[in-house]
Structures are given as C-alpha cells and as structure tokens.
Image (cartoon, rainbow, N blue to C red; front, side, top):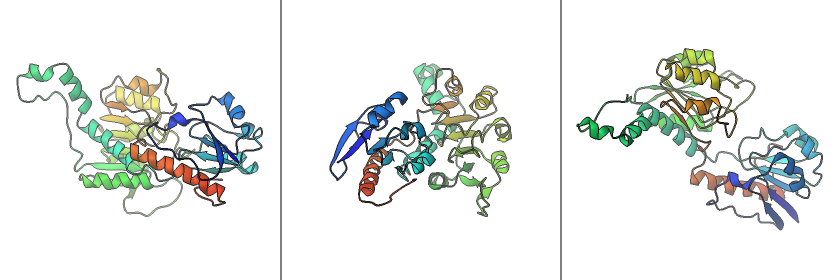
Length: 318
C-alpha cells in the first residue's frame, strides 16, 4: 500500500476539495513542516506532496522508500532535481492551472495604481468628500490605461494571457526579446527599448540566473518617468532595494507586487518598507489563488499521483 504524506497542506485553502487518489493508500497530512521534521515525517512515505518545503540530497539519502515527489505548485526550485534523478525519485508539478487568475491580478494591480484607488479610499475614510462641499474632488491623479503601451517580460502562457486582456481595454502590447534565444516575433522589442517606451512593465518570467535582479537600478532608470512596474512573476526578478529608492524619489508612477525575494518578508524587508508609499501595492503571493485556480491545482495534483501509480508520465520533471 502506498504511503502518501502531504507536508504543507496549509498552502491550499481549506475550502478546496482535495480528493484522495484512486488506489489503496494511507494518507497523512501536516499543515506545515519545519526543515528538521522532513525526514522523520517521510521516513515510510512512498509519495511526498509538497508545495514550498525543501527536499535535497541530504534528505533523499535518508528516504529509501520515497518514489515520487508531487509538487502542489509549478515552481520546483525547492527540490534538488539532479539528486532526485540520482536517487530514482520521480518529480511532477502542476501546470497551466492559474491561466485566468494571475493575469487578472496583474490587471487589477495596474488599474488600482493607474486610478489611485487606495488613495481615494483613504480620502473617503478621512471625510474628504464631505469637506469638499462638491459632488467630487480632485486630490489624486487618475490616468487611463487605454492607449498606453504595456511591456511584458515573459511570453509564456501567463504573459500572453495578460496581453490579450490588455488589448481588450485598448492597450498596445509589446514583449521583451528573449535573453536565451533569438526571436523574430514582430511584437518583441529589445529589453532596453521596451523599458524606455512602455507606460507599464509587467514581469511574467521564471527566476533563473539570467533573470535574477533583471530589473535593477539601471533598468529602473531607463523606465519612463511615471511608469508602472508590476511583478506577479517571482521574487528576485527585481532589485528590491533599488525599487525602494525609485519609489522614494518619485520617478516611478507606482509599483504593484505579489511576490518577494523572501516569503513571508520580515518587517525590515524593502517591500515592507515600500508600503509607506501610497503608490505601492503588495499582496501576499495570492495572484494564483482564485477559488477556481486552487481547485484546478488540487484536481491536477491527484491526477498526477494517479498517473504515477498507473505507470504514466504526467507532468514529470524527473
């Protein structure tokens, strides 16, 4: 009988239906797992389910029964894939589950910043409407996204989905040229040219040695004064200290982030400090987490495990 252990089940909302696999098994679930608890909790497991828990060569060497690591996420940087290959441990991940949710979140951040929604709400809480004596007042800047250029870094599923939505409200969409391969798409521009010409930059690329701190002091300086920067991709794509300085000096029109280089970020993290500025929005890595997307993730997770038990290679990284 397969022994299945879910090490960090709190990474899925309790309202999501997580069905059990179709084959005989014993299921053990833990809300969260500290690094020093991983080996003890997986010592008899043949299948481990993890989202953000780290498993490396040291842990695998002590887990001879383990045959599959089923990621409840797309990202796999918390698993040593080469060590898994050497140990003959399969790894599978979740794919294409948050197609609507992430681009909608990016659009929400763009619209909230362009229309200064949080500043207007604060003014209402302070009684400013009543004090104005008029049917409206004009304390905060509002700009339309219609007719503006959106520069998207990353032309995968999510980047293209955002482009479709942005065109729907009348934005001009351009993508950055790939750093790792030539592309002749007419809607691609060199990164520097994209930064210089776009009114909004949105990041939708993976975190790799090529893309770490992709947007730093130099790149922020290339952006148009008043431009918006959106990151619903990965923490680490932006030099966060440089972003904090750009927000402080007023060069950026605003920034909306859903990810941080450290999650959760400590109180002294640059993005936490940036919350003092009304033109900065930070959400806690929830762009993916619509009810519909989480259910798709949960369903695909069990489908992947069923496929493994049947000897089929579904969404396998290893």
